[in-house]
Image (tube, rainbow, N blue to C red; front, side, top):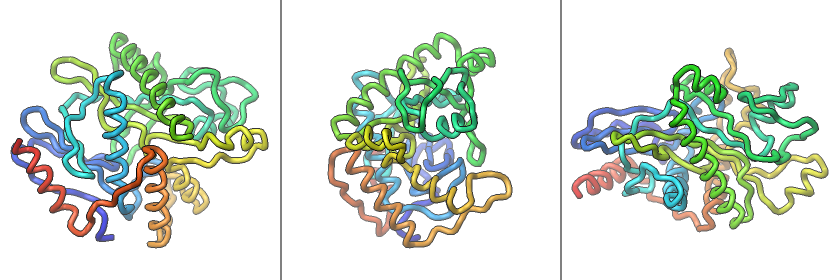
Length: 316
């Protein structure tokens, strides 16, 4: 679709490198700056879907930048500015090669593992007698290795992270502390909107001065799962599915159409009508998570708009 940005090939002044992630393009600029462009690509089961979703990049970027500002008093982050609806600019960091996943409830991947009879995840015990979407007694941290595009993230325990030297023990203690603080703040922010923050993941990096900071994005529908608080208890008591604010609805649609990212499976065709449905769901997510009305950016010439806004910022 012409009203989406799927790939970018900008050439900014002082540009040194470009990294293509699953949904973001990250440009490294001299003076230790990163320009991160949130594309409209949709990723599920670690596979990028063939078509983009209108406004998805803007939605993810604007939620993430707002949430960064809402948590910067607790945990330092990489963000300096957002000069365009799809762009965040911040300090270049060396990323840790793990994602810090934290789960307050038995949902998603954890629930699928639990149904298979597993009672530990990343060496963390999960209580007996839980049903899907029950709350854990305390949130559990279940890290994952950070996969390259096309590969799958894999669960990894704290013990394996330290044993393999992926992160030092000193740094890992900071990552755990920051993860719990951010999840607690995210839970409080969600509650103000009548939502439950179910689970999420955080990524961290180190500045050249050796400071650990939150990077990438935070509390968006791509990295997080939300439930509506109203009706949660009743639905659990009846054993019915929760209404979710996350991209789980896309995963479920893919599963129903025979795709879970496994070898030999093909991505089902997404009609323009279904893409429109997904776009509207993302807008609903934005308005519920932020409590603000979504202002649609001009999609008529996105690449030119992004380039002009970034160039204007880099001049300052």
